[in-house]
Length: 435
Image (cartoon, rainbow, N blue to C red; front, side, top):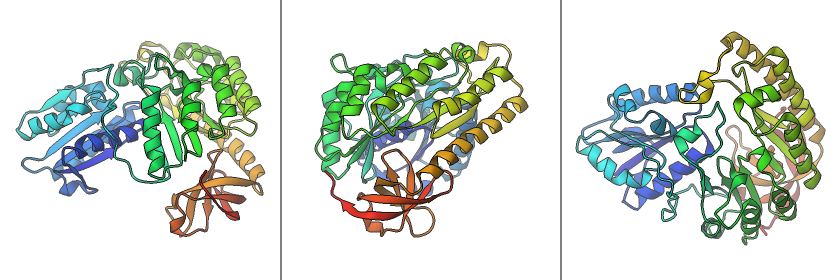
């Protein structure tokens, strides 16, 4: 059986696609890169924003033309969980709809679909961690490791609790075992994944314990994590970050808004002032740390003054980068019931102003880095030219003139220029052995 998967959305979905490949690999499925030659076509979906769902529905229409007798077209992931059996009615040639907790049942669901039965499984299974299913990953120096599934926070704009279920953490020893196996295969950098990853707790160990344990694995030189929740950075967690050499000096720390009034309507569990205290504590413990963030504009009821507070936060927090979004209505979230939804042209204008502020700050900070030397890990070939793409511990991308065989090597690179986001560089010192 030939299997084709397309993945949309966050890194958690990418990790889930690796899990699906692992689940079906042991059933004898073979991965293919072209849907035209596939017996089973799966689209792993995102439900965070409406345009992501519309894109997937359009793509399903395109994939339908590759169907033939006995082949299967399925939707898996968060959009499948949100819409459930209704998706079977919306896209008539879809054969099955499978939520994130039902991947263990994929072999049987596929067999049912092949027999002509259109199926749906979107049951939440709070016990499911797929510990007995080894993910099938692309080999390389970096890997993502899921440590937590689901979310207990109830931000009014967010659909994740409805698509991923309640928060639950894997056991620390199971995570460490997976990382040891990755290190044995040549991986030297791992990123721990969770919806609120620093709230990890397996009943015995917290996130600080996890950082120390994974950071101590022989062969792991770099350790990252995403995405944390601001107020889950306990003193123990910050101390572990500062005293575990593998932990990289970069944190993606979603803020969503710089206005306390908007944060209250979002049900975020911190104020602007508390967020800035966390940023200051992390900067004090890890000098040189870099920050990226998520920001939403145009949330229901956001006034011009409240938006201006978000603009000033970009400078006050001194972000290195930010992912910026215009509020998107998600049916099933509490924000739908809030009044005073903004006109699209107002939200769009604010988004443009925010993007300008973020880019200006990023250019200023990156221009100041030109001439500095940083350790970089060569990750892959660049999409254009004959250059290689490497990454600093602070999460900055650097283009280097190196041969393709250098993937996985560490170098000291001097930053020679910047486009505002990506750097160019030259090797200032020879390759460094992986510790």
